Length: 202
Length: 99
Image 1 (cartoon, each protein chain N blue to C red):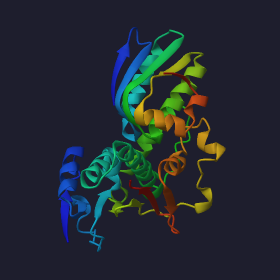
Image 2: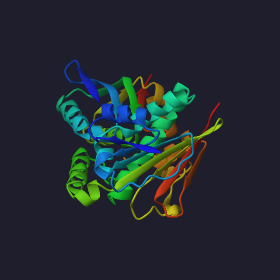
Image 3: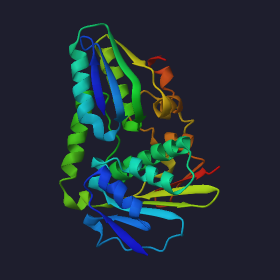
Image 4: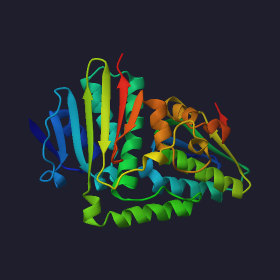
């Protein structure tokens, strides 16, 4: 089992590293901390930092790599990309940076919220907190799990797609409703630090 | 995210992706839109290929700003993944959307 190191610099370098991963790709900044785990033969695993997740379109590259390895229609790739994007935002912001959702309905509150995020990312302990993305597949299904290093999401607070709050005119809080709508199955870990979602393959 | 203003900055084409990482560019675009004085503001989404929940939130904030300024905000021609996200989050009930 080999690990491919990713330099953490760009979407292009990530795509190249993922293409070589068999199945592990680890951001170089945390490679000494990321012990390889035994994985299923049909899998793709990425370990990255919170800082990289903030700066780069990780979900897009990961979904495109999956499409190159298994029979994903363009519709399914789009669903995978979208779901993974939402899971990564949650892992980064709420998990590893410990931030509540952006409270504002104002462009300047939004700007200040991002300044708060960027200030937190100057703390290397936070910026280097790992996020794990693990995809495994069979002939009939694709499962993806995203795990953060935070304190855990309270299960009772997870809004469903039927929750009126999920469609309220507020600028945040839609992530889980989107996962529920796009994935065939969604589950939160007991610790609240991991979300797993599954797609049926045709 | 790419953008291209229309006319006298009364509207803008958005292209590429509108995601969490695009807040700075989106803020610049919004500021320029609200400096124009026309009643209607049009955001053309026909070339926007991807949006996440953060991007949806930015559009909602723009809606709030338009309401405060007594302007009409129109979202034009969402397609593909963007149209799908609008359906999932029931954006058609919150925005004036032109196909």
